[in-house]
Length: 364
Length: 258
Image (cartoon, rainbow over all chains, first blue to last red):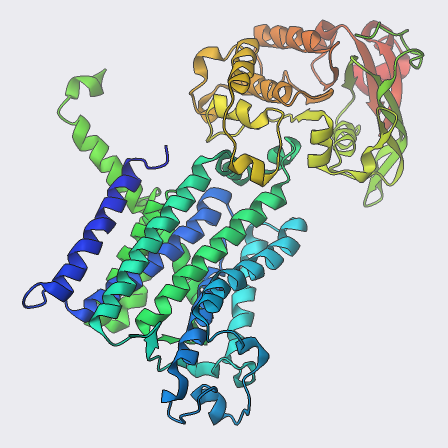
């Protein structure tokens, strides 16, 4: 079944969010939902989509990618490049074609890889194509050589680290360590306006719902079952005649594109993209989200991302110096205490309370 | 169905299903397989015995394309060179393999295990858009009956007993509709009754398909009632009926006498 109970509940929750938040921000008197909160929720939803993307490869196919932040960041950069071109001559240097940082380092013309990014459709297709192509090429070489397990994780980590170092360089033409920022508007809508923020948040919710549905459709198909086979018994799957590397390549590429979309929606909402998004720690945090929420459940991954991001926002506000310890402790405690993640524990708890009034059944 | 060929000699009438000639493979100087030659006829049931380290598993690895031989010829139906193929290729060609340790997909149901093994297009695209057909369901029902798991079709394979997993794996092999089945120690860990029933099952499979069984259990090999190949140090030591080979002094020395 495509929409099971847990996905149904989660989608219903998203729908409520999409109704309540815009109403509370734009239409209700006294603005019970402040604009900063709208942007914050939008950001969480992007993280949730990123977590679903990772769960697709890790939870269902056993590929522990420690570099998924790279695909997210690349999607973000593609969107950021479009937003930079949208600034036009409203930058500090008022150059109609060159972004400020290029004028600053003395470039005279737009490098070829920035061509086309003044068109939204071009940038939008790059959001999918660039992470997808990187994942395809990376996967082609690693899966074909049967690199798996810890070695694969290390290589993905190295990939995102190498990209971080590259994007830090000014000569790369992506704004060096400052990244891309000072965005003005998207498709003509002012990014500072409350309406745009609500629009982006709603779009993120829709993207998360679509991502969950797509991931669910894939995992309930026969292809999804093959993925679980190769997660649990790769060699057996080969001897059944399945070309394991093709399956891994497919899911890895789909997942990277999904992560790219999450990054593209994230950037206009936070207003900046810089190389720190490629940092290995970011990618590891995604793994924590998924593990904490419940690996291999999709909805759990989304839930985990939202819970951890929420905890991060609250804790960095109250006690900034303990946040990392709290994250670490959370991860250790959940791994030991809730092996099936928060979602598993929730569902287990529900099942127990429902059964509790029938002691006879338990004794039987 | 091919007629039983004369014991001991090379087949004269039927096309060989599988033909290994002068195959050698060394690992770090140790010759796991040393000038091994073996011919399996279409529809033949063959038992392969030999002490630990005789090269039985490496032989299966070579036939299925998991390991490449250093020298020698491995031919499928006298035409296809198996040394050029990998595991997925040989599986698609019609070679099914069952491992010593039963490996079924534990987090799938018994039915799904069989469904995933059914002969069908194995490309990601085909599996993504696959819809179960009535013919597939009928075939699964048939297999479930054959391996006696009809009442457990919705069980997770992980919750089956050891013997049931062995049967499920044999069922998965049959679902692939292979021409040749390679079966590694199917009776390991089975009760006597299960062992005898498994021997009957394999005998009923042979004829339509070729079957190679690697086994340690002499009772089981006797129950298979077929030609036996004795491997020793990577090559064939003796070949013939169990009574014949078990009487040979060299066989007694390396294997049976211990």
